[in-house]
Length: 453
Image (tube, rainbow, N blue to C red; front, side):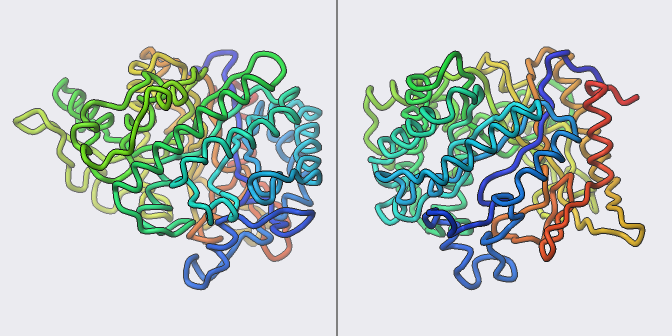
């Protein structure tokens, strides 16, 4: 495997999944506090009240990151820790926490890559409609302004929002994630439009109030079709499927990415969703299409497709094989070609460098009798995916970095603490951290800039 000398090796986590301290030091409730504390919403009624107690143990966690040798750490901020009601009053204790965390990272030689919003909407704003309220762009812009003024002298890499398809698709349409709504497709298109406007407002705020040049993006995700063969027909059918806007679910990548990159929604989507679209103004599109500096993308798995006689992509039944290798979550089939094609197709379409802001493997890791955590499947998974990234770079994709998800085992949303993605095992009863075999493997890989030996 070969990677550029300036390749960014990192790891990632999100505020609600690790911080805990859900009602301490002035933090207001978020939609995930309300959702996870509602019986029946989360596996075994787990919640993020304590999580990894990172709020109190961040120094220990930063020391682990330093030992790991990562060059960058992708973290998110808890909006309601900084602004308990989402607007208005600012909580100094919350800003102080992130001040100290960022200073600690920089002192350890680790660059903070900050995500403004990773799903934990302040409950007070959700009660005003959340992303269904057009005012969200103003609320989010004001929040971004507060953050930029406080942290923008030290933070140089930003992501505005994490995974819009999950926020709107799972949170507003399917109701399996917070806030747990069951909205119509028309309502979801409105929420999507307001989310993109909020992104644009945040980009403006970061540009206006940070110190010096900034690298800004939004962290997209989708579902990756993988061509069944390298035949041109299969590749082109898969590419068309990847950027298509046909399904009335929220996973259409181009519906989210094209407005930012090109200042307009895809024509296919405008045609297919006609009659359900919100009012879209030129001013809206100018706001949404504020220039970004790179693509951030979260990639885990994919599904195989082949071209039919009409050149359209059709799913290949059992495309990865019956009993295929997979993680403990049902959607995580091991499919490294997903990350290869994501890198190729996105950099070709949008003409920007790409950073993989999440990629990782979930398993049922536990501390074994020898006191260690042996996770060879994770090592194998990351090797396969990084090899695919290396191949994409060799084939012309401009890939600038890779962030393993996650640095710590953590609260895996509606799955609670059942599935473990971390390089570090967390005993949630004692909060003892145990680096896994993959931790030491990744440390050595980073030291070699991705060379296997």
